[in-house]
Length: 477
Image 1 (tube, rainbow, N blue to C red):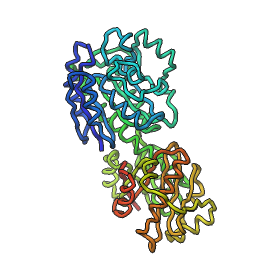
Image 2: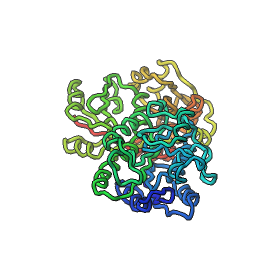
Image 3: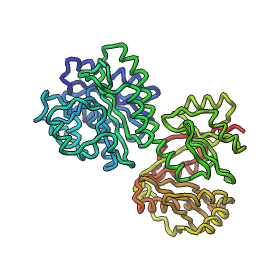
Image 4: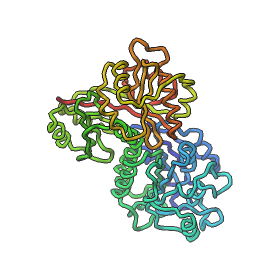
């Protein structure tokens, strides 16, 4: 679920326009469509406001924090750091560095200290634990720094967008003064990013990384032209960031279950695997941040004389595409949930799996699939898996494939022989998959389950899996 946390805090800013941040927070929140809205009243102190924010931050789903001054980011970033640890990078889109301390700040305003406070140096009642390391901080669009900030950045080696590692999870902060020409902010600076450049930068990040949360701050409404621009910009930034987590799972799943023929073309990941019936191996997946071309889609599958199949994933981020395909006669099939869980939690809840075999021999794998599911047509796909993978088998009557990439393990082909269901076989296989995942250093699990498979959903939910997103297929013969 998408949640907007509105924090109308202005006390961290000393700008003459700071009181307008209250109205600005309300307007920003209203720009995010189809979201649950939580408004946090400000306390008598910044620490009291932070405590209120900490209590209401959602434990799941995607959260958009809107301010208010930049200091509202204290608790959302701290929560992301507790969840993702060393993998978290905070990308700070801001005209200013916000890295003064109480001793170096020319103004004494907290919004100019927030990023340094998140690194463990700030007002004693606001410093979080744990704190960010400097190498977890990334600056973007920064062009106005105080001398002490320049020295700190040079000493710590804080870098820009090119410093982000491939496996990083990102928290995105946007102070609207990063934009060029905007006047509805407390401290506008010339030479910033255009709205299009900011959108493109975040689209690029969302295509490559999971985004843990986004904060948008420092809107002090004064110019109707700024309002008009933000009504276009804010929903698009939120859409890109919110879709990044599901997209990163789908990207890993596409790698984990590789089609024989695949290519990125005109906004699609196009996939075709002759001789395999699974829709995932023979469907097109829309790429995030791109506008997919229907003629290119239909031409790809026409060349292969097979039905056109599209994985609309997740549907809530592809509403226009879904409607367009429906209007062209594409039927719905295969409504599916994607569920995720922490590996450690599943291991603890699932208990001892007993004797579960790791099967490496391809011929034995085929025999097991035939015995348990009645079909071994996926063997050609399994033989092409390039990531770390294992087939887990329980007593010849239950199995699953586990595939690990970048800290995640996907669990595929969960199956129990029809004559042995409801005897704990699937639970044992899943427990073994979680243990294997821990051995590979993967802290997160994902799997797919058909929406109407209520027994399987009950098993997964009982082991701590929650919904990440849903998808369905659109088919046209």
